Length: 222
Image (cartoon, rainbow, N blue to C red; front, side, top):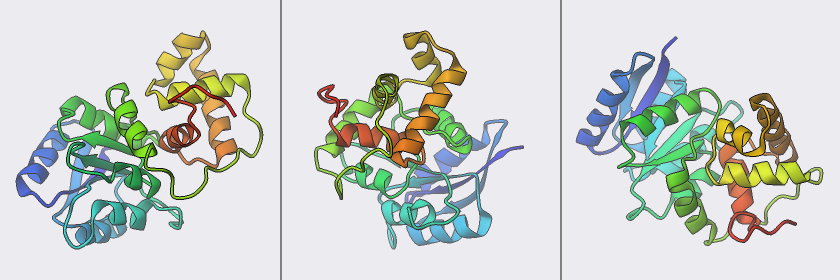
């Protein structure tokens, strides 16, 4: 089955380019396009796509609010949202992640990373590429979280602390397995345990928690 995507960007040329790249993939189909955030939310609710790809800066309703409306903590059946942005111009990536975005891309990331992000989101995962994780999450974590970081339901084990830092550093499951000489199944088990203990919905929220608690920036453990 094709991955159904809604693309939202107020610039027609950008929207058309994203749509062409995605439709060129054998397993991805753009089922709707929106020129502003309100249209994006309406399309998302009506079409229930597998993935929403939203620009941050849009008229009527920006990408952050559109993300919150479709994927925020108050949404019972959230959609998968990937935010696409220009780092040097947008100061809202961190806010978008807190609003429920499953991943993010820079607009110059290229078609390979774009399609990878869409597939990851559709599979319930999140794209956190090594080349942008430290730069973006680290920078926006410095602005401070909206509220104090949650306390784990149970204390993290030493191995979970290691996996936590690896995830926040942008490593894939395969890379984590190789680094710690464990199986992919074991990696997935540890990540599932982290999500449960941190009440995180995906890898992005795990990474955000790691930055909020300074585990990535200074390697401390609490």
